[in-house]
Length: 169
Image (cartoon, rainbow, N blue to C red):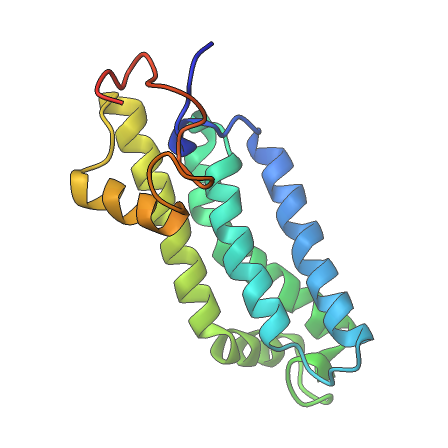
């Protein structure tokens, strides 16, 4: 049985990642508005950051470029849809679509920067592992293992035993 690290697992095609991204962000908007929020806020931001990272981990290697440019396009697309249908969810109800998109991007810029940075960092790590067959640098592996629950713990990055490209384990 071949063991894969977190960085080698993603196998989903880009078109599925695009559909997943649109569905998750529109669902986050709908849920936030249904629970009584007057405007799109922190729930959308959390969903966006988690989604950006998840897309980078789920996509197959040959579709890295698509997912690498996807997070900002998803945010702009969702904000444009909201601007056309419910501008008050992001800006003043009387604003036009372009103004709603600009206001939404300004209000959610922290989520955009954090989510996009995590996406690009995960893609870069996956690309390094894929190209060199070597694990991440020691400091990065130690940091990730610490966040995942430690080596051999419940959250270990590897499923079982050393893999064929990681003889040291």
